[in-house]
Length: 433
Image (cartoon, rainbow, N blue to C red; front, side, top):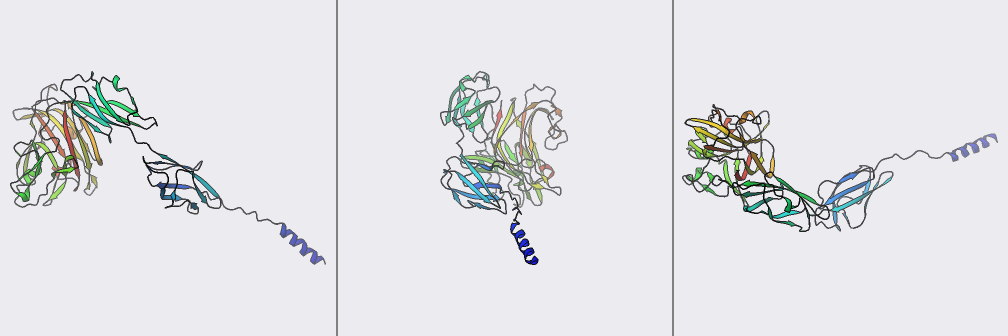
């Protein structure tokens, strides 16, 4: 009897034991999402489980496909990758681990950014150059115009109903770049920088939209801006190399066109085992071959400059055992030549290894005389074989006698150093007064 009572007591105790072991806490998180029509990266806020996604202007909300979705590996989720959602209604992602987690998706269709479509100042020469990508508007005034007392005669925008600050009618001083901010009624904004230059003498064919191909020997021809070698101030290493006995030298400078845009492409290549930088310069070249040539940089020029400008792209390659990145050289020098002596009067120099894959504006000021801003490679050097200069001219206010303009895809091409396949594209080269 006692044994039976003991068993009954034991079973009653077992019946009272509860399963109090909790399920593990596994947070349900979303790490990344990409939708059809998405602009930029999604903004994910784990503290309140919300996701904000911007959509490109004009994107329809009613059928958005989920292109990418990354979340807690242990979880199940709905909707899933490749599902289509209706953004017109509230969209909630449900993640299930051991618990359920709800994530709200907030969508915003971006508005088109406002644009300046037309811009004119009283008395300007020609059309304004409007670059929406860089936000820069350039225009030219007759040499000697008082840039501090100008008037905007016409400015048109898209959309038309926007706010422009400062008010165009109040702007008079364009001696320095002027910044305009455009804002729509919905808050979309964009800035433009207005840059005014003086008109002045330009080097022939410096827009690079007119080219000729040498016809002496079609198998070893070269291309240069202009109509012929006689009327063009431009030269390249291809001119000397075209005289080689065997057609081994590939052209390093050639004309390119994309739509209505014409430009020069300079490419670093090899020929007969010798590296050659793509180089285009104003000057003369004598001799023939790849290495057996003499270059005379510079042509007569008697105007003082403020700066030079152009649009460029640069795709440098890596070279050498130390994997060095190639550098481009773009420079304009003013010289005073007295007999056999050449002196530096002004320097404007740009050297860079940065990759620039889209057309970008470049505006380089000229420094007159010696300047602390000039790096070592920019200094005049009497021992430079192609560009010998005795030093800086004693009078920085002097009138120049010559101008040197050089573009090179590989800055150290003279030493046969550079990355094969490096390209430098240039267009719209202009001297500013």
